[in-house]
Length: 265
Image 1 (cartoon, rainbow, N blue to C red):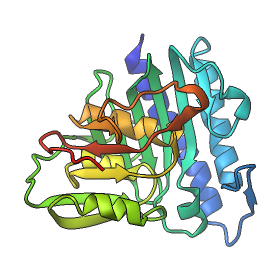
Image 2: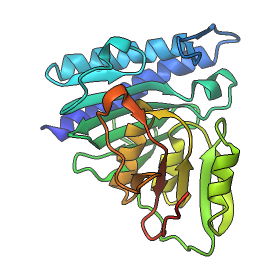
Image 3: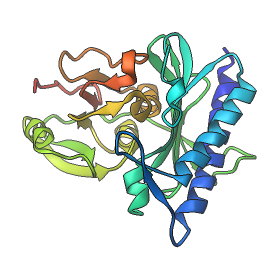
């Protein structure tokens, strides 16, 4: 597996997709439609998906692509495959809150081993390098040249004063109840897969998700967190969150910096 080529391609395609997304985002108005599950989709989602899938298929014709925006790809997801969410946080995009991301991951036998998370409106780019270590490219974000890289590492958490990150759009009472089982000093609020990246960057210690997500929502951020020394486990039994599951639905999960004693819900 040529991880150097894979990472370089995922990075480049995320930047191209991010540029297409921002072209739509900066329009005075854009059309929002509802998919079969009532979730929103925009022309930005579709444009980014086309860029990413065309690029991946051209560069890696032997690796399958599973993407949120193409239902016919949501089958036979074992082994090695790319997992794509071209615009995670469409609600944040529609409301022009900026917390949306481009997500591309490589999954190998249930584990997201490489990933890129690009937040074009926030100008933040996170990814795993060829060796699987996570970095934040601090800019400038050019397709033609890699900018300055900052190694990422999870925090050494203080269990008497944890920093917790939670969803902007999906916070509920069950999540608050679980968070209240810990000693928390500060809260961070973020949308989309940025929550994984805040933990990976040491800007938060714990991210619980007690709500429905799909594998494409989490794989790239999960890869970045693994590469920074973090973990993502199932909420129910604290085993590692895996990929290639039938239906591509995730169970509830907890992302965290090791050193935290996880509580039962």
